[in-house]
Image (tube, rainbow, N blue to C red):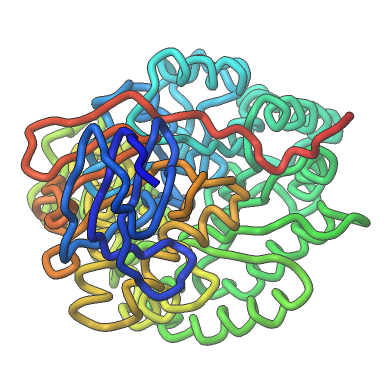
Length: 493
Ligand SMILES: [Zn+2]
């Protein structure tokens, strides 16, 4: 039957996000939705394009970001993500969320990863969602409410200790409000000094709010090194006890890794433990495709055998991109003293084993998440390179898994874990979040030396039916991203 619509993409190799094998089809888009899929001879589009030899996939869902502030900058700030094919970002990770916390002074690390006190001006998730609606970015946002952000308010900044019962009650109230106003879950960063003071019981008590209000528990675990197995057990216990009688809450382990050389190879144990415990409760994890991490610079955690590259420094901005050993030599002081002098600062740490990274990525529970930090002067290349790197290096060059599997880990799997309806999949009725890519050419170009080089082979990206990226075009963004709210919130009469 003939019909007219906004866009027809013809002869595409469709990889639909479910993990199923690719198929050849035309795809019709009307407004913000996919209208039809198949051999659409009768369709005519206001725009038509021939995608012969190209892959059409659902827009990528970046399962782990720190884009809380970047999504507030309107259509032009997330070129780093649109240029990779990303159409949705999950913000508020590692216990760090911009809402619901107002701050008068510069926050302690790692909260300052998102900026100084000027950015901490949202007293509620409602206000944050409103700001996003007023000046939308080019990507959809799924937001988590961060434990450390809640602690800063409930404990009046005195966060290097366990919370009292009264403070826990304040956190519960604020988390409840946040989940009702659109936060999709609760995140913690128990690895970081202020939050490491929080006993498991504190986290369980706050997370119990998820039982009634709906949402996931997402965590940067207490330990990703020697005690990584204990941390996985702690995480799953939190999921079980927070969920209580109705059943465990869904748990997501953030940027799963095994750090430090003595733990190389232990992903065999961590993945086996998750599979064993995962028989009885839902558990997923995200991972980025690099053997180096990045966060705020913490002199206490430095180790001689781990190479460190500075990503930003407030007192010495010119040191961004430099190796800490070189800086120490130049300043004629120890590495530790140089690190202290650079604070507040951020760093890349080369602390993982490539074989672990690959094993973790290849596991069926994995999702791809960049963990990119968008405000760093010389960021980790994962900010600009994560998705094309998986598709180019790990699929085409190394053959770690199929293109279908890789795309599933960037789309359908994420939508399923986060509970995001009608995204992460290509089918009639789903939102028109789409990426067209050249499977022979797609690759990352961002490196540790040149971290902001855009990818190659991502041809065009649509978010909610609007073009947000075109390869080779100087600038194509549209403020069409939506705040996705809390899809797990129970519907009440
Ligand atoms: Zn983290």
